[in-house]
Image (cartoon, rainbow, N blue to C red; front, side):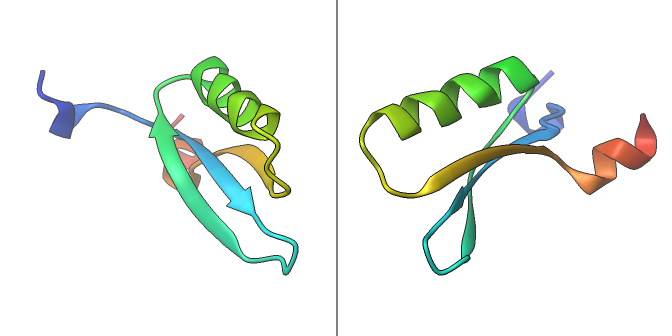
Length: 61
């Protein structure tokens, strides 16, 4: 399987103080995404990092 076929249903989203949201990355598992979000928050950033499942993955399973 190539990376192009990988299923990456978990997103890490950065939300700034103005409410703007930006996708940081996509991950295969919630645990992996949460570890990234936790690490970014631990770096002293003032933004909020959240983990969300993609809408497409919610519909398919």
